[in-house]
Image (tube, rainbow, N blue to C red):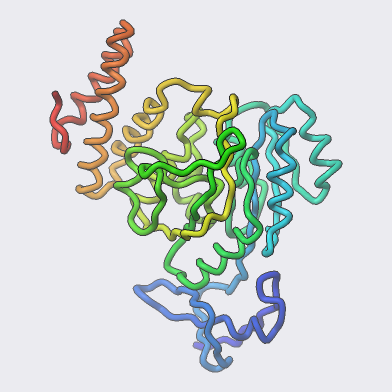
Length: 334
């Protein structure tokens, strides 16, 4: 069965001619994929089962008492060469006038207030009140460079097998540009093994399908930190990701209210994420062994630290985890 499909020009396809030059569909392993850009004639296009939709983008910015720098983040969103279709600020209980600032200076933005529940709840709230097919997150202390969304949209069109794309970033610490250490180097493809020691994808660097976030359960609201580590582990255990070597955002650090400064022992949250993922039963055998080994390694460090500080109950908690996961792990219990 063949269908004649009329496509309206949209934000990313500003003319009928350009629209008509972008689409071809092919069936591969039972899944229809879009490939860009190809010319086609109406009688060559076969559409089954799904409607063709031009992708739209929601930019979601969680904020908590950062009104003094929120404007920088918002300005960078509105400066995009390919504008976001929705710009959503989720105020996680601020008391510094964030509402008034957004309503006065950025009236086009969607503003949503919630009682303080943490960054995961704020991001999830932003996802819930927007409708765009693609999601881009921006931390309130970061800023995108003007071509960020355009480059990522182009990349997803050209390589339609990917559902998430991230990019390199410029690091600024206390006003000074610094180089990333080798352990923080970004990459693409199968990232699961590289995701195990630490987070290697920044939320502010990502553009991903809404459906992928939904399948992965969103951000874990029980985690006060390392919620991004938890999410990327789940996604990268199932899918490869696309990486752009271009630095398309500035990531600012060194300020007192960073989560990494607020909480001690960040590995305790990573251990929780690893334990949860292992208990889900979704990992392949090789992935499971690697995750077990990493959990044991991190738990040993936490156990030793707790023992030195005479926190007996905490040390016993990590010893139990070590005993549970040491069998079959790459690293033997020492």
